[in-house]
Amino acid sequence: MTGAAIALAFTSALCFGVALVLTHIGLRYIPPLPGAAISIPSSTLLFIAISPIVLGGRPIVWAAVPTFAAVGLLYPAAVTLLTFAANRALGPVLTAALGNLAPLFAVGFAVFLLGEPLRYAQIGGLLVTVTGVVLLSVTRGREGIARWRSWVLLLPLAPAAVRGFIQPSVKIGLAIWPRPFAAVLTSYIVSSLIIVGANRLQSGRFLASHHCAATCGLYSSACSTDWQCFCSMRR
Image 1: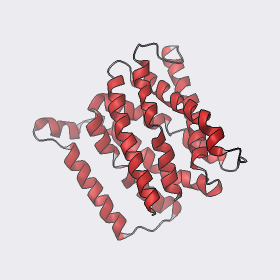
Image 2: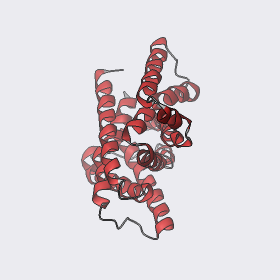
Image 3: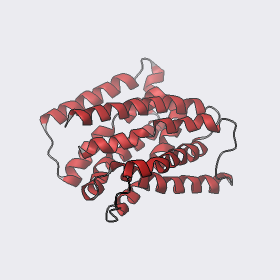
């Protein structure tokens, strides 16, 4: 792993943490589904706007597009919706802590799907990650024990598992078309259609009409998380 990939991974984690805090503010006034129907399309529009600059008129490798589109069926649509629900129920601290288990799932899927070797350094890193999550998540007293026993903990664990599955999966597409931005753009377009359609079926509106829509839209300020994450996997 190069230094640039490590820097991108840390920047991605920073953006994810900032996004959780901003989202928690917006979710005080708006449910998770309408919030996701704002944040994901906002990020998609941003990516579409800068795509002529980033892609620079390079030809599309259509063989990789189905893989990126398949990724978009789950990510970011399902991940964002579950993360929003977890953020609203548990708060950003516990959501972020349990979300850090994504590397545990990613390594497992990479070993089984891609046949990547599991080294002692990776095992040690996973043990440190799990230990850190436990220390951050468990609080003293009955309240902390009750939280660990609650089914609500599945809300942040589910998107962590999906992110862990997506990371080795998207590498299949990146092996065909090594353009992380193309992967992000394609998956966001597909997810935008899914999440906006779901919000339309539930509420009868394509977008939320609440006055705090702009607040929840601040999540899009951290949309670079996915691009940086895909970049780090390419290296």
